[in-house]
Image (cartoon, rainbow, N blue to C red; front, side, top):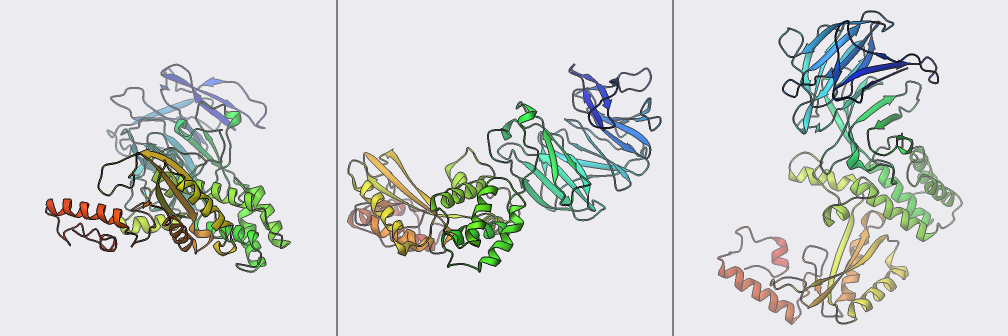
Length: 498
């Protein structure tokens, strides 16, 4: 077992210690070929290939950030020679420039050099060698039609006849990402996945700067173990990568939770338990609770509603935002974000919709200087306590805002109270009908409904109709005509045609 690192100087030299048992470590030494000082501002990479050690690093000159490599003279690693620089001036040494340290992998009878480009963020490049001195086949690693990139160095592993590329995202996508090759050649890539950090305060994803992955060859299920570079003490960092739930897994979870609430509904208990058994092996957040759910189903015991609904809420939120906490626009927090999905608009949002459980919304606006919004909340809660509402999970929120002068604004009063009711559609397909019933309760008061959510299409009391007419006069004054881009099924149904 080998640990190689760069010293604390900027740039620093490369140090190396080894161990034969993982507990006792040998002499620390400096890695360099005779008479030379080898150093970098970034982490080095080391691999053992065909009886020799190979050390790769990124140069220190910002104007010439080429990758460099030296090779040990024998299998002991006691001395080093054969320094090469990937600057494109020598045949079979293609140009390789990076803003971070490289990755070396000895696998599949080849030595692989992978790095991130100098752009911020940069794409991932790859070259291979069959004997350690001639390097060929430089290419960009990405699945078809997609750009995969990062501000930091990637890592690559070979497992069960496939290559796996891991990297840390950037901007708002600070998760660990993964691509898998379609074959043992690594010429095609697919199956992009965004791996969620296990819940808890142990890692701030915005602080992660690198990822390194090791696959245990003794592992029967291909578990991946990872380390991250972060200001958080490493003793507190979780080590198991938790994969995102697939749509099939999500459906199984929802079916299991629904059956735990009502044993007489859904698929037979044996079918649910068999499906749930595979998911319990994944562990992670809620694993212990799901074991309890399985016990409830097996014993035909009704699970505690509060526990079930709390778990559903946590599960859905993590699936939508890929983590237990998130910041961003409210629509992304409650509904997720389709930006990560590929294809045209229709395909992007179709894949996004199938990616995780979704919720349905209605939002009703009240005069907050009256108590109607409180009466409405009481009536809504009473409705969901009734037997006719089915089994639902979601939330009710209340927020307050000032008046708006926009003709169609929902904020019509000096102080407006908006009551939002959100239901998880995947738990009960009657979610929309239940929200429509909630809207009928709201029509007892002088309210406005959010134009973009589930709303009664023909709710037009005199003051609402007056506001619509005012808007239509304004639209006509701007020359808006039916069918010119402002006309749709929604506008026609809502009486908003100019």
